[in-house]
Length: 76
Image 1: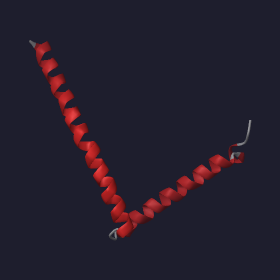
Image 2: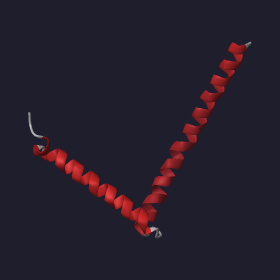
Image 3: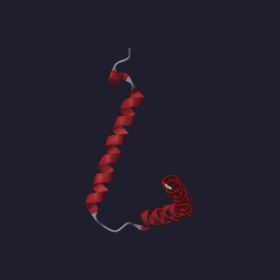
Image 4: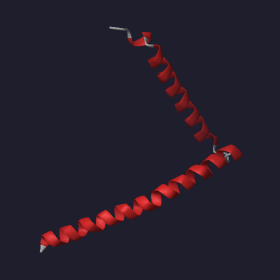
């Protein structure tokens, strides 16, 4: 059985994860406004989130209404 630290892919993954967490914590401490590239990415991702979120909310509301009607019917 190979040793835990002999697996190079695992070491690279763990190192990358630690670096990612460090970068996230550093960016949260900054508290400054986003630069133009970050703002562009946020705007693009926000648009996609809106396009996905609106139909998902309507579908969730529909199924909640169906569930409420079914519960009301069972109570009678």
